[in-house]
Image 1 (cartoon, chains in turn yellow, purple):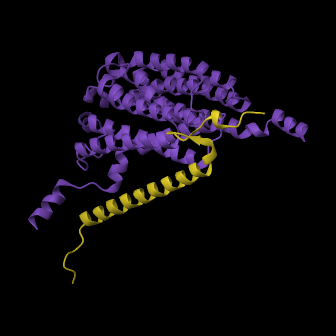
Image 2 (cartoon, helix red, strand yellow):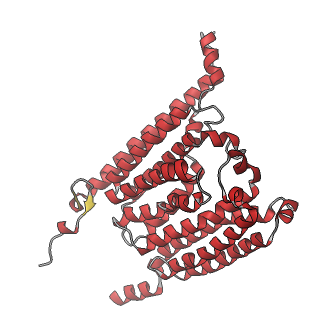
Image 3 (cartoon, chains in turn yellow, orange):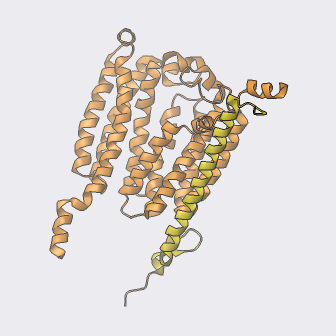
Length: 61
Length: 317
């Protein structure tokens, strides 16, 4: 016999914990994907906001 | 045993209660309009950046929803439509909603700034401030113009989407903004007409409460008339085209017909059929917005297939 019986409350807590775990895992995956995307276009980014700057492109000869 | 029982009695939130704090139905509209704003912009965005940006815009909208629920918990408990929300129902403590709202606001703004650009992040921050402070804390309980001005908060997402792609704003996002801004009053006033006693009980100065139902019907018609040219104007910019214009003409004609029918009715007629016209107008208002933004999206998708583009492509071969 189990020492403690599961109450509906425990199921709710488990649901909350699993939900939060999935959200955090999704956040990690999103940041990873974003990082790959940013680095992939590394030649076009500059400075603090990682935005394309026309000043970075080579001037036409 | 005793302490466990005490915990059970106070109620404990499930994961879904925290999701409900973020107003997922409002979020879905925000996601859709922001996505359209991003996709119709003349600059292509990396799919991963676009996905992240849309998620952070949605998160910011959700955070402002949690702040709104924290502030409005007292009147939410009075109104039938909102009494089942997590705070008035006692499943989430007000302080939790405040903490969640503030934390997610900060996270969403900072992350959008990093994922996209500072202008988009600043616009998102302003939107959250506008909805939580200007609308919820100030306008909602003080003026019948609450949703006219407060509607701006819901109108920002396509502008933010556009800013994510272009790093700026221009006439096109301004027209998308105006479309939602002008659409909001008739949408909510139709709701107020058939949610009769809710706003009265909560002492929210909706137009139905302060100026009466006859005046509200007139306002629905007036704003629907003013909305039509705004909706059509977007069709003549670079994001519009024949598909959008045809959609806008038909949908606005139907919307005007609904507003006209609302204006012509009196309370006795509305009571007799349980506000059937007002309810169908409200439902159609959701379709109205979806079709306009859907048509803008269709224009963006069809643009590469347009005659001029095909001729130019063949000519270049």
